[in-house]
Length: 70
Image (tube, rainbow, N blue to C red; front, side, top):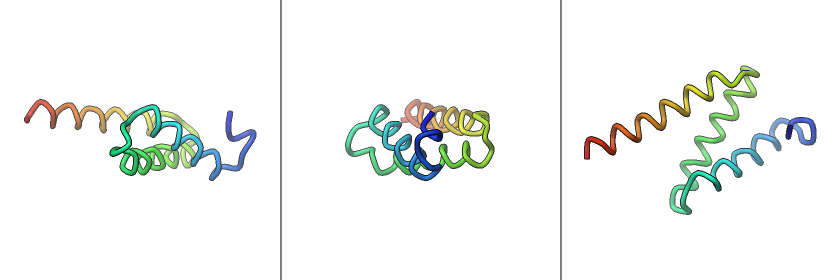
């Protein structure tokens, strides 16, 4: 993975940029990039995908709930 090629911070930033590009429109980039940094930090701290997975799921569920309410 990226951690084998880069240090943790560089791998985090590269992954966050990739996440942002594939998930959003240009207007959404700042928020998605910040969210991607949070998800990546969760992984770096825990070394497990569970917490970032649940956080991503909760983020998506919240967005869907807000969309349904409007």
